[in-house]
Length: 280
Image 1 (tube, one colour):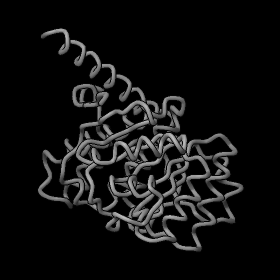
Image 2 (spheres, helix red, strand yellow):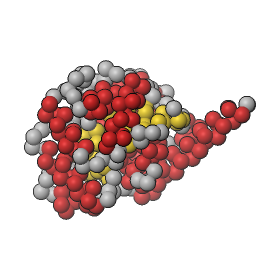
Image 3 (cartoon, helix red, strand yellow):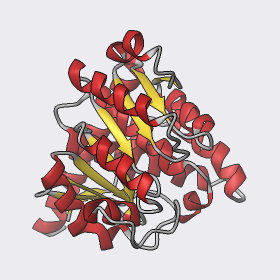
């Protein structure tokens, strides 16, 4: 190998070791992750967290938040099936997490689909999420704070189309911004990292994006100080589980099952050999 190949291999091994260490910490500590998420995703989100070793709490009643939210290890807010009744609880939970110094992650599902949805996302952004994760169209719309260029929860943009929008959003908000796609992009506004794991079939399973957002929250719960790297690691882990699940899956339905099984069964050798994270 030449010097560039040696350098790349060393970087890959370092990422592999970091990623495995974070997953092992999640399994060891079983962080409690509160999820205020949409009706479509609740099942897969909870099972993703359980398979990774975390403890999910699907709790959204505003009356319970003062007693519960300050004691969780991280919070995940997903606006997929947003309603006026749920928005106050989302904002209150984010306020409580912020006050308690707990990381929280925002999934701005279909941010540009309506003015109500966009305003809700902008209000939540003011509460300083640690990480924002969406597809290309969602991040572009949120960055522009407009209702243009969105098609529901599906993305009409590749993740690479949203790099500049992601950097801008990270700079203005102070959040780490992650863009899911064929290559998952993570940025703090300056550095840009790409996670190259995953398979296209994962896009045919509803709530995979929601689930990886919750996994990011679980990873942040054990390493909030390195949010950029931790986010990239979570995206890579979920992608690896998809790759391994695809080896025996026959389609989206069986991949959903095998993805969860693969996430549960991931070992150090598989993680270190499969992680594909690099600076862009």
